[in-house]
Image 1 (cartoon, helix red, strand yellow):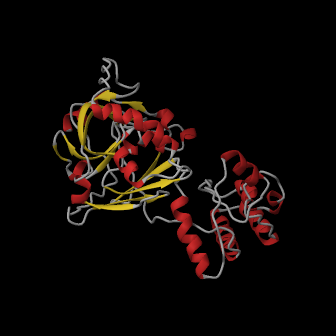
Image 2 (image 1 turned 120 degrees about the vertical axis):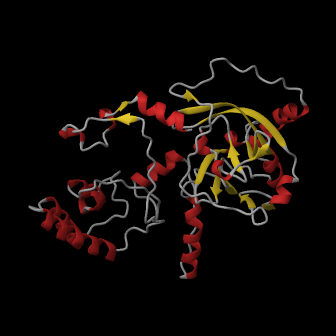
Image 3 (image 1 turned 45 degrees about the vertical axis):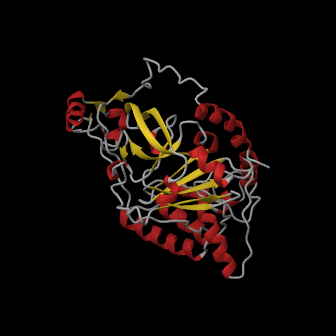
Length: 353
């Protein structure tokens, strides 16, 4: 059975490629709210610009599809080529109008690999380590493509060459640069690629495990009732441990429906250490109690980290100003309610493009 999203888009795509669909008249008021128009093309990335020889470039297209494929550069460029003019919007508030892209339409790739009916999302992976997901229906828009040319010239490395994703209706951070893989997935995919290797490793230990995806309502109900063997969750905590630890780690929380203690931790030693952390009279006492808690917690093997990064990239956009001495309640310059837009700084950045 073909994927329904693919069927819905096929007729519209055929009309566009046959020239029967008239190009839409471009609005004179097409700059989104909060955006400013630029004539240049600012460069934003992770700080990593991989140098990929065309002889080594590969595009893997797989996941829940009937015909997974890996394309070389020659094979990819031998596919039907598609050219489109669209506007480009960056989430950092700049926009560039009338960008001419050329490459292979996403629809063409979908037709080749044939995504299965249960596919709802697409995950793009890049040579610089970046990944981003989009809904299948967005990727199947008739102006979405894997571009290899910009303004009829090869896309330079600064802008994600040799190939990058272009989905005009979405902000540009959803258009992965340096694209190397496209994966069709059945549900929200941001963590799913981490599950399969873990399940495989469990099998090596003789532990049989499987992954089951349920709808969001059922998932929330089962999590609140602790109705699972293992589940995935993201936790965010205060930089300084305190009473916020109780709902995550205490025996009382383990018996409370809907608590954050999903592992069911009910350990008297952990309860006692939480109270020591909360009641610490000095930073030194707090540090000792936290280290003891860390050892006891890790010994229980309650959580399994799925990934870890030793560094985190930070992007600076110098168009704001803030008081030289922030108010005490602001907790430093990181409080955006005390920032303001500085036109002179923005003008300098625009001149530097």
